[in-house]
Image (tube, rainbow, N blue to C red; front, side, top):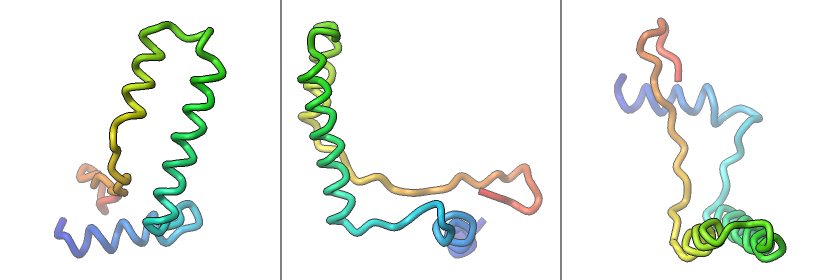
Amino acid sequence: MNKTAYIRQVLTEHLLSDTYRRLTTVEAKNQMETARSTLKTLISNNQDQLSKAEVTYFQQSLKLQHRLPIFYGLPKVHKSPVTL
């Protein structure tokens, strides 16, 4: 499957539907920060229910810089016509 056909099929099958909405970079970063803040609050409010290893894992995970997610589809080459 060539690149142009792949992009067209991803757009047609997934990204031009009501299921997904493309976010701007600012919206995506805000969503990630909201998720990070919510996770910090959950960890803080439930530390007595978490093991020391779990608290350490979450704290270290929150220090990492994560990249913005990238949407992609895997071609199902065993189907005819090929779907994603």
